[in-house]
Image (tube, rainbow, N blue to C red):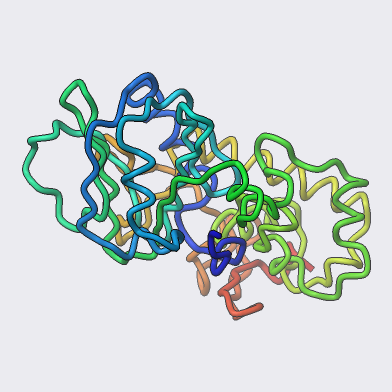
Length: 288
């Protein structure tokens, strides 16, 4: 059965906008293509399979029927009721090239198509993974434990309040919990909390429904803006679009990565601290 280690935790980049942007760009390049060969230069990418041969055995000869995404997971529906799952980890990206194109450094997986093109999974830090699962394996995987998707199926205020009821953990930590709401990571949680004027340290169960409504609206606004910009490519350029371009949302960030700089709203110095093992940045004046 697929391991759930790291599946629903607090994974960093790429987050929902980066995965969804990748899906949208890949969709016309891979749907209706048949996989004719699989190469796995990096065996670590297969670690969600008990038998590493399962992925190439199940993938070769299959036609990709659709692409999808849930949370931070990219999904491709294959003929025969199989699902190709890709998690980009910290530094993964996907690109479509000619199968005989020069080798791309840090390629961990390559799937060749019948038209001479190939999908390459490039992952310098090797935290990403890929698997081809049966319906039964999907049902036993981290996918089955994800909360509502932050973009496609966000909870309403009452549903969100029920998920947070009685929770003493800081709201920042629970926004990163993929079983509460799926798709957010450090960047967009910080940005949404700033827009909603909620401190990342505030106990989640003590936030009023009015404020939760503001937070849900802020999450929607941030994700929409990030998608329009192609996601966020940080200074290390670990995330790039499939065509090699950088995501432009970096220039729109209000708080993430700006600790010690002035708040763009009130000019108070932004504060950073570790909350639940992750760095949070916020304005102590705007987000009380």
